[in-house]
Length: 420
Image (cartoon, rainbow, N blue to C red; front, side, top):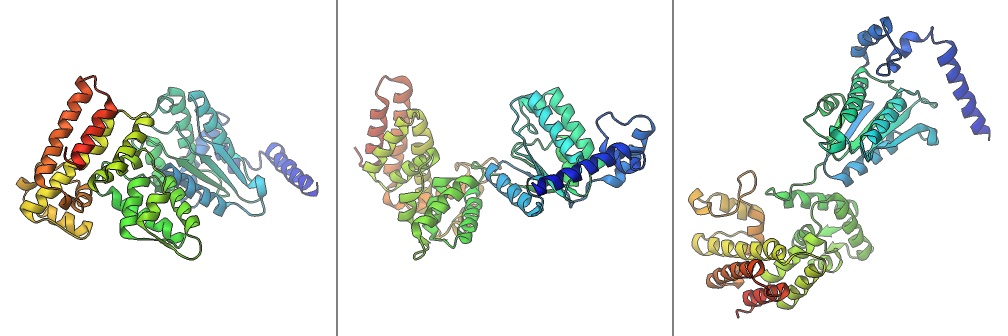
């Protein structure tokens, strides 16, 4: 109760200063009124003149943005904890949930943020965190006129400045970098961008591996190279998924053995949709017929279409095996690691690589070829060419015939791996 009354006395004293002595403190408090229509005439002019001196310094404005939602939230939370005064308790933070269902909701959230930034702290300093704002991107809510008007008010306030004793954190996984808000905030704020690696971009696997190694190092876990590659293919590039799976491996290993093997990854890492697709391709590469049939059953049970399974999991693996086999036999391309392999591929004349699939940037998508090169020796070129023809036949049967889709896929896999 003593602490409660002490806080209440300080609040009443602050309110008294704001109401009874506003004339004395007018020049100091005018910038708090900017953007709400409370200052007119000469007061507005005075505020505009003072704005350049009140630009938020890098020390009290922070922004965490990017498509990697898990990393954005994690880093923003860590900073919020670091900046929070240990003596202020609940009075030290204003955490505003930024998830808006519609434009009206977004306007309400923005108004709450502006109000929180304008309210002086009770205990010296405070943190205002606009958490997970979802109306700053190119969405229906983000494009609404009322939302844009409210964002403009927030932008003007951030440019005009707010008290140094208030620390503002913005976190958003969806933000339109073409808009004035982002351009101005990026100049004012300590901004950090965390984007999930583009799975359609060559080299995303390497970015994901670096992230996995970083998370593993923090837990004193070591990955064998092949285990790391399989882990990335199963878990993908999402930070939250990676963290969950690394934590699972950490708990499984215990204090004694800290090395992660391929067998452990295969046993423990959850099979997401992408993971099942990757595993089916791996089963084809390794000619593991029982496992391939089991994975087809899993995908169909999960509601995946047969044509989707064919085009996403089977055709790309057979094609990569054929391409890798051709590079091995005709051009003697090889390499014990990815860097040496892709280096050898990139040194080839353009005429020899024109038929190889490219990324969005026009570069050779080398990593799938590198993985396929390890297993291509287990097939002959004739078998792989026949396999591509079998994939074409299966495609036509799935699209034009009434054959059972599971039967079509099973026949295809048997022909690929057994030969009849």
